[in-house]
Image (cartoon, rainbow, N blue to C red; front, side, top):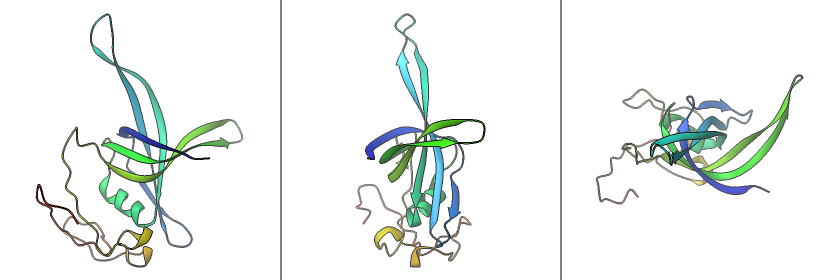
Length: 158
């Protein structure tokens, strides 16, 4: 059974975008969540243990994450948690994985500009036909079906 979990941590490396044989996008990235605590003797904040999570997302959501999230950025991830056993010729272990349902920047540490993708339908998140490439926007990224809409402070983004 997959439990629901929300984590806040730092992205270890740029998210990796792959394509399944069907053409659907899959993105994977790792997030490190470090415990912070106050040392009672020195009254200083210190880092504790770091837990690592592999985050996966699919289809249009994967494409949006790939265009939006970068290495070192502080993010909030919510989704379904599971432990995955793995084994190679020389070792075996367990990895913590999250199938993402929501991903965003942690706005405690900076600002973010939201750009809505056009024509949302189901899981395709605005990507026509669920995959493929389209026009390139002004920052050089392929943005299939994307329409750049700036949202003013206090304005509803939909």
